[in-house]
Image (cartoon, rainbow, N blue to C red; front, side, top):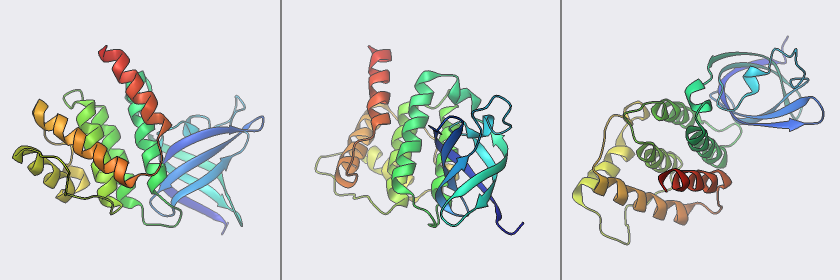
Length: 220
């Protein structure tokens, strides 16, 4: 059937629609960010229920209509179960997905953004990597991929922080989550990333507010 299209991607968000449908936002290799409708998925017997969960990654077969896509089937290769089972990690992953949603567009080449999101979710599952470091790396690399960053910070940072920022900017996505930093570098990196975010992003992310509230509650 010529109107069927198979894409590889991740569910950024999944919203109920009507009595039994869902509207998915998918970040895909082939079409960038797209919206797709999963009809009847909220019925108990639907085979698509699991595939419509946020953060699900795999192959989605879609019917391509004139102005929308409809999910016909899906083969999920990674549900990121560890993320979904821990509330703090759900908050991090939700923020990462919302940021990806903000920066990506339909029919753009978003392969690097999809790879970054996938690798960042994998990094969140690693117990030896601080979640805050994963967040700062993800935020900075997202802005770098989108062409929105500036090295002229209006405050001093140490040489180790400068090196860390240079490494994140220059490294391929696959090698981003391979290092640890000192508490001083982590603090300065966070300050630099926050400055960049405030400069280049013209909206507040609700998921970030939830994340920061969650983290402050846990730390408090």
